[in-house]
Image (cartoon, rainbow over all chains, first blue to last red; front, top):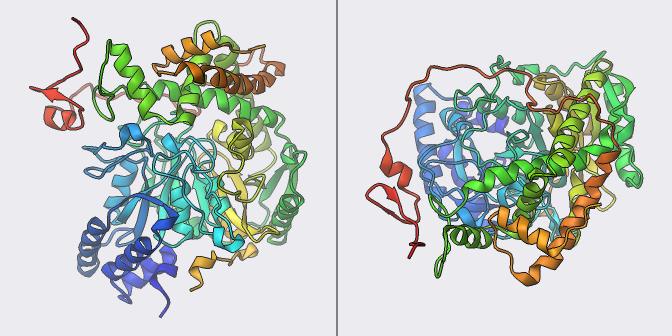
Length: 492
Length: 96
């Protein structure tokens, strides 16, 4: 019999239905894997007892015939989703004792569908980072590290979720993406990561980073699994005024395998100077695979691409500085103790102690670009360029149906590398940020190995609320790429 | 254009309500200047007549009835307070 931790969501769903194994057995296998691999530091809070309790309830439901779409399937929950009565930290010291009295809509939807939560996964503090090295609970290790004999970052900010799925500690996990925080770690860890259209999933109960960009999505082993999981996460929510009142299609049914006549756009501006040859080659390979499947390749132009990253690093910190103003030591979270001579003093000491360096830096950048005298020069200017970036995509979609790009400019790098220079670190997000600014759906699919033997992803970007075409194309790309390499830790 | 000095950083830190030790002001000023220099490239984009994006989702906000849907849960609301008494948040005494 195959190992239960090797299964995809779809396979496990079918196995549970046909009674090959129970939800308790499936969950126990993952709880054991989680316990055996704590060195990855993929979880901030493990919830094995809760998971086994949920699994037991799932077995009852499966027996009585009222199983949900994710019934009995063990998943990880990024520790940015508020979970009722389970500690939720956002990987920050300022929230290290926070027990939410409520449940986020996305995690509630998954719970309702029967999913079993094995734990809360690690992330960059307040989701700010591309390497998962800013967590107050320590860095996450990429399961692929052993393949090259050094500690690698899993990407970020959803690095714990990516490591947990790639290391097979859970079948799938939730992520959130603000500038690439689902797609980049998926690429670094050899898994599939989908950022849905802004508004597809409710943001209610997700600890806010940059509200006009944040969007929850699935991180899974396969494209089909992403379709299955998104189905249970998405939907309109009265609690989030930006959640979209649009029909929820059947995402799994969209995987027809047929992309004949589909127009695939290749944006010329993504061919950046100094891009490693292996990334260029992989991109070309992806193009050829889609062409072989009957799609038509067209060249498109996204002229404002080079300004996207700088735009993002004004918009996101501006919104973060406002969102994070609520952490003041009065109503919840960490509070500074000792001699305090004013309320400002309480706030300032609390926030200096509670926030890590990167979060402090971004709050200050945000405060500066929103401050009197600089608002128009920075924030208003950035919001105008954001309009131009979104218009670029609108024009491109007059010529094509879906856009193909690399997910990242590199493979996973070593823990400790690139840390000295914030700007260099931000460049990781160069291919994912424009999609986020325009609110579009994007997916990263593992498409090959680097010369060094590490996974590399390709990204597909779609029209607003056209996750169906994105998933359908990604499914074809995935089958053609036939990526089957695994981290060495799974070979035993 | 935007080289930040120590005093400016000190003021930003105060506006952000984050205490920054004096010896950290200079390195932080350099860090922030580096980031601002980098975003300076945006000034080359012609944005005359471009509307700033205020919402990425092309939809208008929905109305709902103005009614209480939850409430009357003071214990739950105060559960995570660092300090509380009689259903009120407590802060340290700061007035003599």
